[in-house]
Image (cartoon, rainbow, N blue to C red):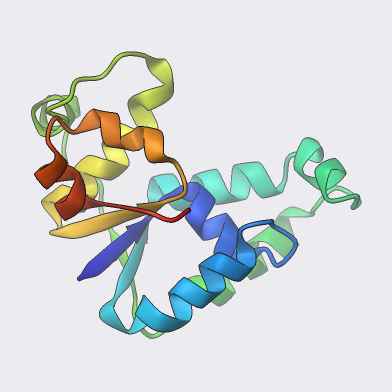
Length: 149
């Protein structure tokens, strides 16, 4: 199985101080050889969150400079099994893929990532079990979503 990381999974992999980092690193060590991916949404979200002053305060750090966050991102996406996936579909495809329906604005990014995973025959790797509500059936969730807990 090949994988697509959501923003939180990518942060957990790249940021050792993140509480889920040990779990993500262990999962990555076992599964990255199958292939993993990011996209413009995950990379932009990674950069946006890491460079927020609130993120630095949470980890008792000075604000993380854009150059440092860029280096962390580049270090990870140059991994030999990483692939960059293009978001080459519109919202109509998101609506038809998310068979459980969208309920609100907080699901939009997750719905796009889930659709990208489905389009590329991958599982979306996340820590957010709530994303499963975007798919109507257990079979769909098992096929397209991997929730790390």
